[in-house]
Amino acid sequence: MSFASVAPSPARKRMALTLAAVLAASGLATLSMPAQSEARPLEASCGNLPGKKVNESFLTSAEVVDSLRKIEKNSKGRLDLDVAGYTNNGKPIHTARVGEGDTVVFIESQIHGNEPHGTVALLEVLKTLTNDSKRSAEIRKAVTVVALPQLNGDGADLQQRQNSMTWADVVEDFPQLAGAPRAWNFNTANGGFDVNRDFHPDLDFVPQASDFPGNSASTGWYITPEARTSRDVYKALEQEFGTVDIFVDLHNQGPCYTDDALEDYSTLSISARFIADPTQFGDWPKFDYDASRRVNVAVYDALQGNNSPQSKVTLYPQNTNLPGTALGAFALRGSATILFETIGMTQTTAQKMNGQLAKQVETGLTAILDSVTDGTLDDIDPERYELIPERRNVPRN
Ligand SMILES: [Zn+2]
Image (cartoon, rainbow, N blue to C red; front, side, top):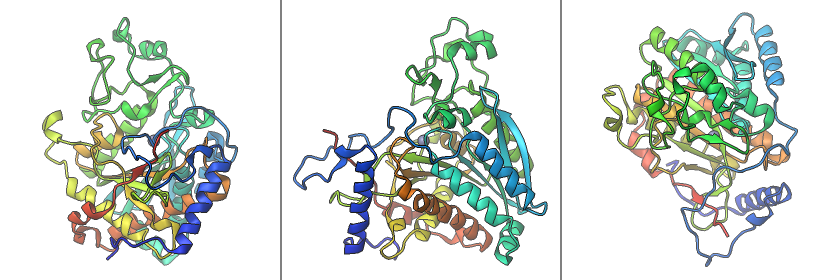
């Protein structure tokens, strides 16, 4: 039922036009609506945007820490705040843990520094989970939530995708890499690595010179302190719970359309699929694509609503094979995984839309926790995932 594809109502069209206007005003003026007959190369990028800071409205690393401390203080002991590691520039990376349930949900945000909405949403979820309501108590009883907001605080403060780290920094940490070619995921303009290509399903992986430069179809190496921190949190949870049941990674993407009509922007793309063939990377018997698809359907269903921008949910491209991402590596180990890609990045996102976009992520996260708490997650037919429409790229010209 939730998958019914209907023509956009006038209200939804107005919404799309408003968003287009807002994006245009914020520097994406070339994204005016193309004519229907125009060629639409689906390979065209609606992905990462270059450049740095233009937006003052998102949280710095210091503001995230302030917020977490405030939530902890008001939580009546329901939230545990810990320093799990440090960024390359020495900023503390915090985890916030709430609940005592047998099902563990690990939620990470802003591994890409210029992708901010997930952090805002995650802080709101933590605030709600620690309150006095009956529902929050039910969720805390069923679920253990471990949040890692703004993993890449250095990139967040610079409003760039990458962390802030040179190859010389890497060699200092791993002397065996002296003389090796620099890792492929280093961005010369921004002076840092794409942390979300630095993961490996072997949590004890130690890099050797022959592993470099590597490429996007291969596993990463845990050369960045940010990826190692995420890995350390995951590893400890695996030891405690056996399997990390659900892993959520919160991102942003450039504007994409909901369908070939190219009228509505998709406000959120989601995905269960990061590994084309798990056997390509060794023996991973706990890999569970159906579990991932169920989580994605739970989120999709919760975001369907009449005349709501929250209903403009699509799938991220399904030909993805990224074993070096946190999602890919942790999926191989048996976690049900879901990617959130909210429209817009710090370079482009209009302040007017920010609250709505963060709310959409909050609704999706809450849906995951609700479906675990109510026991409805396991009843979802994973095949329904295949009915969610895939995003359509904005034509490049
Ligand atoms: Zn991202």
